[in-house]
Length: 283
Image (cartoon, rainbow, N blue to C red; front, side, top):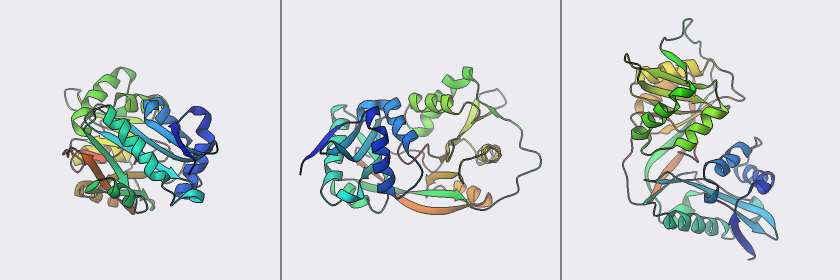
């Protein structure tokens, strides 16, 4: 098998997008997500090539306490040939070389056997919710939600750390730059940030809130914004408050994925203050 695993470059963006869309059977471009790997941590993303043609992709972000693997893709025309295994070996070797103790991912049923063969274990389930029903929003929107200002970004990054479990300054900074009028924040009475939500073009997330009331206020405001498709939210299956909240606002479960880990097991607040992930790939 003449497969070569090499670092992902911008020159391969279009060809890799074709592979990713085919692997996941989706029509919508994934170029934004692929470009994010180059922006956030370019050394952690790789392509598989056969005769100079891209046939696979895998990316990982090292957050320090843990790394997150995402967008694992192999072209349907060359599956069952061990290409996913080669990509996984390169990703795990990259994480190990950086002395990152834990690697996480969200696995769909097709990918889960590969991850289990490499030693990953399940410790939770991740549910994709999508708003499929129109819900009448309150005539008067809840008070206290505002757009993030540039000056507040450092405070937002620091607020996020204990909830996410690591600093993700690059990710949050990039989201704020990409969606300057779609990052919502809520404050305490003494003007400290107590929650935030990023309304991406197709996904609402991250959503972090210290209370269900704050999460609801953020969600209501986010749902007043236009989206390119019905918005999705990714959240722990154990997060009962999030499940009840999303059901009230017309979201229904689309699929459930296995949240898996390898290395040192860690405990995170996935079912308390994390009401929505940034994505399945970025956590």
